[in-house]
Length: 170
Image (cartoon, rainbow, N blue to C red; front, side):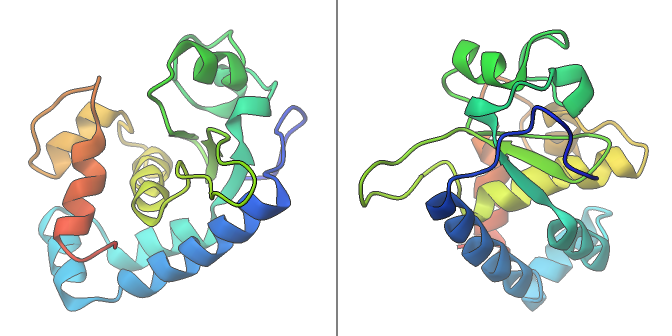
């Protein structure tokens, strides 16, 4: 998906972090345990890798695009992505359900990295991109259900943890 007006670029430091972790995620998807895990849940590892390869990252805290236009659902569709992040302080990232854009909460300062950008979060959000582009429900509950996890739309860290537990992520 092309960048749209209102999508704020990541800072140079955050973009470097994202690029490095994205490369690591692509390598980790080749792990035999990860590939078996994904296929056992009906997820094509090659298609997920392609989704990650095509993923474009933005600064969600600074993006003025509406959530409807971005394809995200942090709060309400008419609110901007930035407003969604301000309203829900626990949300680290949000993925577009009709493309490969992902919006990260800004964070880090001085020499501290942005902890909202992690390998498991990149993969977690890529699952939302993947299911959305496949024409399926891309909600947290759907992804949790596909992975056989407890469904809890208020705490979706179990998706990222499951990716780590199955050697898809560090």
